[in-house]
Length: 236
Image (tube, rainbow, N blue to C red):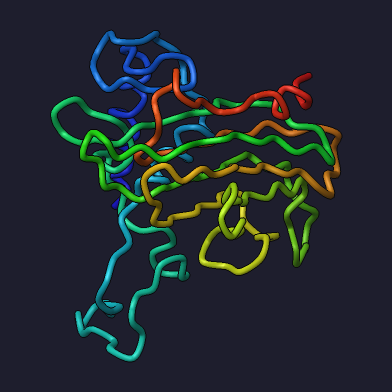
């Protein structure tokens, strides 16, 4: 697993450095955008955003028997978010129809809320689910801590209009207060609009950098792009 992740990370870094992206949005072919150096947290967010959940059971070592009473579940302690899959992670011309919006190492202050508005567009035949992943590098926790998160950032998706349903990360029905990577996977229909919310709270330090990856059947930038009005409030 580790060599595959390492190789995938090297290819992903090359993807960003060879200009497959324009500002926050990726265009999917070499040189179509601008070269930039992705932060470690953005690399983590993109890789884990496209990870593919595994099914089956746990195989014991060394006898190789499968423990049937312990099936694999998404976000469990055995597979986390699953096996990385670059085709699910980034747009590639001729390979997939997904769009990718990135936020690279952005500062947020304690108590602030960044909001990004997105719209679903399946007119090009895209039928991918909506995925959003938040990642950040937390400061070291105290020795012997039980709840070791220092700067807690929450990810939520709120439907705009309709039932105004709120979606939470990592298979939970509430905010995640334990992890430094949070992912939401969900089905979305054409023309639906959502608000992606990044909310900081209970910081031990005044501000924290984070990265965000959003993939799916997203409307083009000239139709509806991430609303940075609220997000800019937390810029240093």
